[in-house]
Image 1 (cartoon, one colour):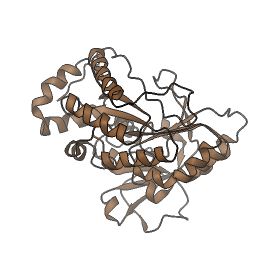
Image 2 (image 1 turned 90 degrees about the vertical axis):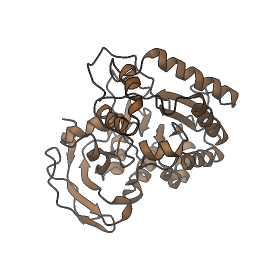
Image 3 (image 1 turned 90 degrees about the horizontal axis):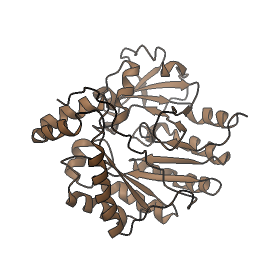
Length: 352
């Protein structure tokens, strides 16, 4: 089990205003320190503090992503994005992929010190490290636990290249550290902004900063000298894939000073599929037949739909002067977006 490398942290050094909580521990985290916080931002949330035994994660060779190593200081995410592909990983902890994923967050409290030790190991060769690839490392909990500054400091001190993909505007707190790191290594900063419709945002990404606030952060990083990439993801069939939505989103991304935009159509893996389907049937029942058709073969929409969507975004991007940088052209390049995998063999999954 992927969670066998986790143990409980000592009690000393607890974040301010933290109080031990007493819900039953999941079987996969038998000795975690469990906490709740008496602030409105963390109402209904439970945090499972653990001491990880390893923090640099090797990406399986079969994964269709342009990086080999990741660091994930959190599991579970208060962003509560309905479509998050990582939802099913929470079932490894005997949690559910729905409300538990949004409200029960595992915190690797020793992430920074552990990363520094692993970067110093003779076997480590300075490979690129990607962050924000599973759950967001700048979700709300980061404001309290502050795991990212020591992580960035370790990568900076070892001149190790890395990239961050986030929906969290809290990354602005660490801009000085990121600028220092970019002086000695290749550093990529990318934001995820799939659409700018605020009503849709409140419905499908209720725990995230608004798209406008994320674009303000894009501007701040661009003004600081970063060539910021924007992952325009996910684009939601029937909800944000119209010409009007694409035009408005690409125009806002360009106006924010982004260096590139990379579109990615919605995909629905198990866990996210069921959670999203429940919401769709409740809020947009007229779209259910279309989704059944698009996702009848599995997690990914047909390649023809993905290609057509990508082409429309690229046309809009060209019109607004957004030209994607070639790999290796810039030192502070944006995080490469995961390439959509070809539609897998039919999984016999149902949507609703």
